[in-house]
Image 1 (spheres, rainbow, N blue to C red):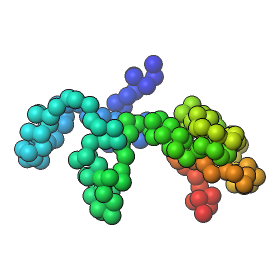
Image 2 (tube, rainbow, N blue to C red):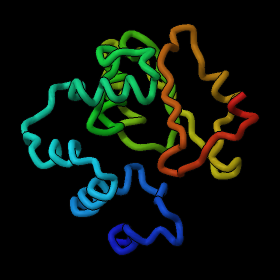
Image 3 (cartoon, helix red, strand yellow):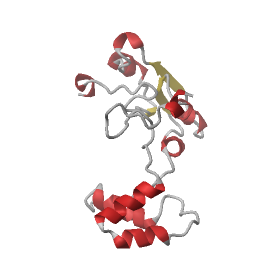
Image 4 (cartoon, rainbow, N blue to C red):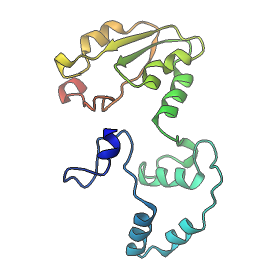
Amino acid sequence: PWSKRHKRDFKGCKFSLSNSFAQPLSQPELIELTKNRGDVELLNLYNNHGLEYVPNGGSFDLRQDIARVVYGNKLTADHILVFPGGQVALQTAALAFAKGCHSIVFTPGYQSTVESPEWAVGNKGITKISRQPDNQWQVDAQTLREAIREDTKFLILNEPFNPGGIIMSADLQQ
């Protein structure tokens, strides 16, 4: 398929942002980068780590690092959940927040994005708003306003919009 033939061809860009996942480095590339940085401790941790499953929600050390690096320690590891990809995160969010209410999703979209509110216990319906090519796949703010009901409590706004990769205009974000 096309994706396999062009996986590493970034057309002059250092990093590919065209996938819905990070383009991984190979094990030798990771080791070489670590050696070049002189990070012996990290290399030892890498070479001697266990291959058992991590706890649900992510390993404690990873959650601590996220709290420190991303949130400046304003949150603790206990406030952070790590998922093995966006699909599981979307499903978990829907099961937690879409129960007993009306939800709004945008189409076209990945199955987990569009259907996950249906799986919530007692969901009170889902309005699917179609993004259209004639307005560059932007969210139609008026259509969104009209879709909101008194019992609407869950909205999935996938940004950048996948599968199209479109970002909402600055005016629309306001």
